[in-house]
Length: 338
Image 1 (cartoon, helix red, strand yellow):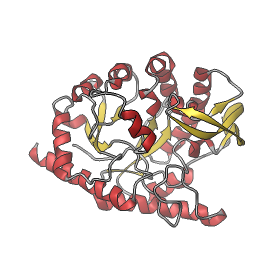
Image 2 (cartoon, one colour; image 1 turned 30 degrees about the vertical axis):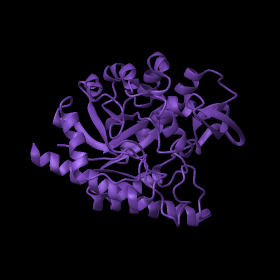
Image 3 (cartoon, helix red, strand yellow; image 1 turned 180 degrees about the horizontal axis):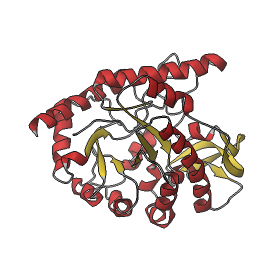
Image 4 (spheres, helix red, strand yellow; image 1 turned 120 degrees about the vertical axis):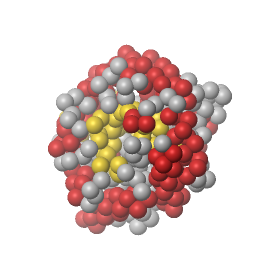
């Protein structure tokens, strides 16, 4: 009950990549880089265990970015043909590769790090993949020229990868869909259908993560324009509640999301963000327990999983892992109170 987990990414060690950057440059090359990615994955798993996290992640240590890390082993994408496009309804600009042909998976993308993580923990293991709508919003397209069609092409490739991860012993496959908080009409029109295609036939637990973004300036500036009550979830949660996805991960700590909105997810496991990834202030266990108590008014305890608001990749490592220890401590307090 009240098992803790994280949204996905964790800071990379300074010997592997640049620190405190969302799109860091690798510090290693060739075989040394491949080995370093595995070492960092194992380290991230062990540090989560030390912090007391119940359902651990690979920390996305082998990926330069949560979307582009998956795209690297797909046919139909030209990384040499880069374009600068607006991301998340032009919230910020990014230089992205271009879809130039049919999307197909060349082979396994994340087998190495998933296998390493599975071999080095006895705890439940979560692995994250980008969701189809968010990929579509983070790439240029000169082939399909239709966002729903492109999303379903990516969903088919994601499904192949997700099935392989489940076969390796991954307990939870989570699809990250921050775009669901931006294109609410499209979520209902084709986003949920593409997400379900990505999760089709999975025997493991399935999850979707929807938040207000990493703790970078473009996102914090956008949040400042949303007013005193953020109601984006109100438009998408009913569609997700009716979907075949088992878990929904959301932002809560220091957010202006009306807590009662999580009641719209009746019948789903709810991963409640109790850790603010946009602040270096380390929560106390009491802070975490208070967030859990507020959520318990709307979600049964056996369906509530204390989590982080979003990924922690751009954060200083010492801050990130201190926050994870607070997450575990707060969940323990809440369990004791129950």
